[in-house]
Length: 129
Image 1 (cartoon, one colour):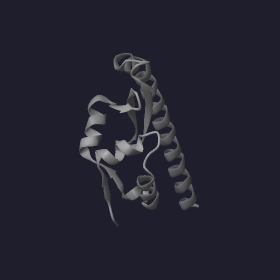
Image 2 (spheres, one colour):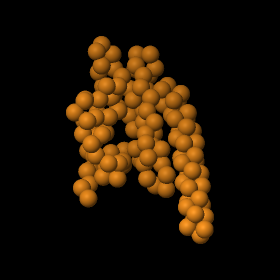
Image 3 (cartoon, rainbow, N blue to C red):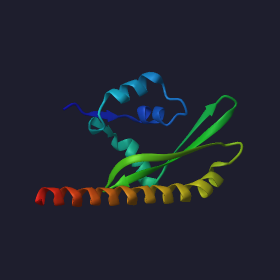
Image 4 (tube, one colour):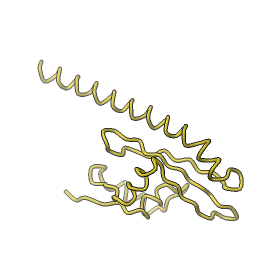
């Protein structure tokens, strides 16, 4: 099986409002089991529980905050919020959005864990029968 290590630039591209079509096409052609995130990218997220990015978009700076959704130390997804720095400064954005993103990520993780446990029990019951 082929394994792909996603570098920071690929993960950043996927976080854009309109990711490049070639990146999306490639991503859709690869199975999820083949995709992995680099330690550098994951390290930034795990070190602070979130990652931020600032970029100039047209005439304003746009800030992104991302929080991982984890299941048994695996990153399943990432919740991201974007806002204009002229409307909400970074410090205020972190105070306003980060707790809500973390709460949502925790709830999603709990739902995935619950569904995984139910699926395991169902499989065990079918195997026993």
